[in-house]
Length: 254
Image (cartoon, rainbow, N blue to C red; front, top):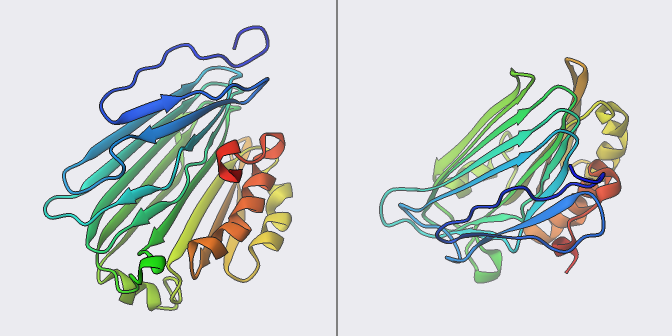
């Protein structure tokens, strides 16, 4: 923080991982992540590390949907590390990840929140390309989240699916045939009061729950839909609700 505004202190970029900072008038400071390689395939490794200092407010999104292509060998991996100081807030709001047929992908998300810090974390995934007639999809997908606050683990999940992804998504206990899914996690003291409005937006194609965690609260929401368009119809207002005055990343509305 400097002069009452969040400002960039250090930026490092390497390889195909690029970062651009749109001009904004106030908080939150916005960053747009770009993978200039155009996607990921077997053997690729992509990492993002973002830190917000005490009292800082940061919003992160991506220039476009990340594409995970067919893997001839090995798997593609994306690692995200988020750190937030006391009184700070981070919104991790990438656009959807599109998983192609026979892709192999591992995504690891590690979040460290100081006491009094807040975080809004989103990951949305589209399995297959319906517009290209890709309705039968195989491969492997592993999503791992670890979120800590004040050093204590407050959220952990591991989602794995494969090799016949399409068949597993058909199961009622998994997605009931849906191919577009999203998970949002809000860690904030006011999370509980947003629970019922969130449920109204989600409707019967997902759900939301709240827990008290230390001096804060945790709201976890999951959505599923038949395609990316139907998912966004509810995802957009849900992000706007949970992200407060910061609202939706500007690139989402272009």
